[in-house]
Image 1 (cartoon, rainbow, N blue to C red):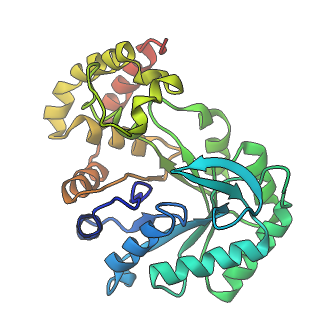
Image 2 (cartoon, helix red, strand yellow):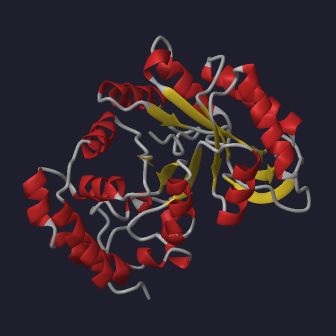
Amino acid sequence: MDTADYYNNTDTKEAIRAIHAALDQGIRLIDTAPSYGWGAAEKIVGKAISGRRDQVEIATKCGVWWKSERGSPNGIKNGKATYICLSPDAIETQLDDSLRGLGVDYVDLLQVHKPSIPPDLTPIEETMDCLINLKRKGKIRAIGVSNMSLQQLKSYQSIASVDSNQLRYSMLYRDHESDVMPFCLSHNIATLTYWSLEYGLLSGKIPKDRNFAPGDFRNEAEHWHPWYKSHNREKLMSMFSGWHDLNEKYSCTISQLVLAWTAAQPTVSHVLCGSKTVDQSIDNATAGNLNIASADIKRMEDDLIALDSPD
């Protein structure tokens, strides 16, 4: 379960109900980060798992800093200047803050949120030594990375075993299929995919004439995500309409079918899905139980290949 959308304006009670619904449906991994809502997401997760710690594996992150001008500038996010800082003392400080927010004494997985960037370029050896030490102390149980190139991933892996790699992957974004994902598979590194529904674009609920609420970043998405352009959304909706028989065959929605396709890929071990409501949690969990026949997976793959590139 992905909590990236648990920002300060999130309905806390509904978010907690959504997490409880996910756990009740058998979901066991909750992915969060200090920068999601500037600590708010971790506090929501902490409240939700109170009394249920043994039912969940918590994955959080380190490296995105906003409390001071420390590290390398990483742009503005939700009105705050952010920095990338992977120095050992910054990682330990951030982890301790996360543990307090989550109300736990350890996390199951600590992930380097983004690679270090100039000018404050922390050597990977220093970052990994810190993570290894935190694991020895029992504050974390596994080490992960996120948003890494193949070379960066290899550099981390050359120092000590990396347990997981979180990366963007979907039907429409498959750049890592030729390098990072096969490397993970061959080295027994779990892959945690995010944006597998492309923020709703692959849900089958965003037709070409859909307007987004004021302030929704998708209003500007077509400038950097060509599939959000109206005529390209129409192409997607046309492809989805050809899958109605699959929806009936598997008693599922388009988004559930897409998530099931994603989970069926041989280089994917975990599919992260955001849920703000109880219904979304149940829908996502149901997708995880779908067993799509190989012939239908192949058919969907052929339709994707035949889909014209966005223009």
